[in-house]
Image 1 (cartoon, rainbow, N blue to C red):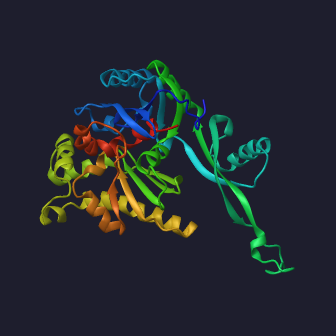
Image 2 (cartoon, rainbow, N blue to C red):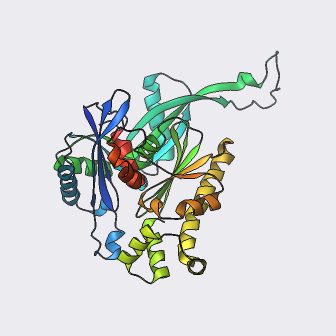
Image 3 (cartoon, rainbow, N blue to C red):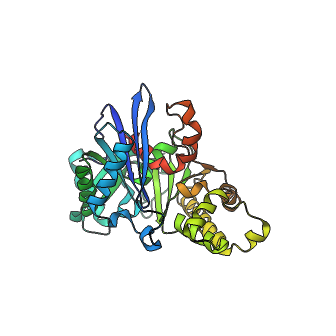
Length: 371
């Protein structure tokens, strides 16, 4: 199995096994556009389950349980293809971009293995390692001590050397085998595994755009990734997300989890000034996410000299009323809701529904768009 190779079937299936639900999307290709064939979602946990179970990761569930739910949603959604790409939570894998000088293919493979040992926090033998050359860039060669900046009519440009940028992805063998097993139990042919951030980049930025930060607010955690020139340059995950927002909302409204979740979706930050002044816990959670957006953006600017031009929100919690305006005020740049179904072919009467569920289906759509 190759993380970067997708066998081209007649249609494409993306399965996003999240921490709170499983989402599936089937797309077909019509000339240069994708056509939505089917989609569906099944919740991993019921509304009446205790909070500690709601916050548990799907990675802790038995393979048979997850496979049973996958089969259920495939049947209900009338999915026809068996070829599937599945997503992995950012915290379950590792990715980075390394620079290597141009070299023959056989030497490149050895160099990547050597470099991987410096970046991966576990033994290379314990991970499924893959790499992809994503481009070339000019890199300033270090000056030799005492070297003059101009010599024999040549200037600093002579010390510019081309380096290959290589995307390095590592998935623990234990996690890879788990997903392979789930796919087999569900009767699917797993042809690709991919970290969520790559699927998000594909579905939400369908064309090359200026540096953009995608913020995926899930149930258990939030993913931040900076996409520059179509490539995920930085990805960051932290455990502050939808469940924390709901808990803070419950403290504000004095309701249980179910009531707080419902109010969060319908009322959100459209509160009276008095209510907002008493929403200390809620504002702290939201502003903490905004601070992370600013921190990652500043870090990228300091490293590359490139500023982030806009923010795209995804994930179910991003639909909370008033959240867009709050983030716009806090991060000081344009913030928009992501719409992975934009540009796809689908029946016009689905437009409103797809716009509403779009932010939470971004990963599944990105997986189905994979080639």
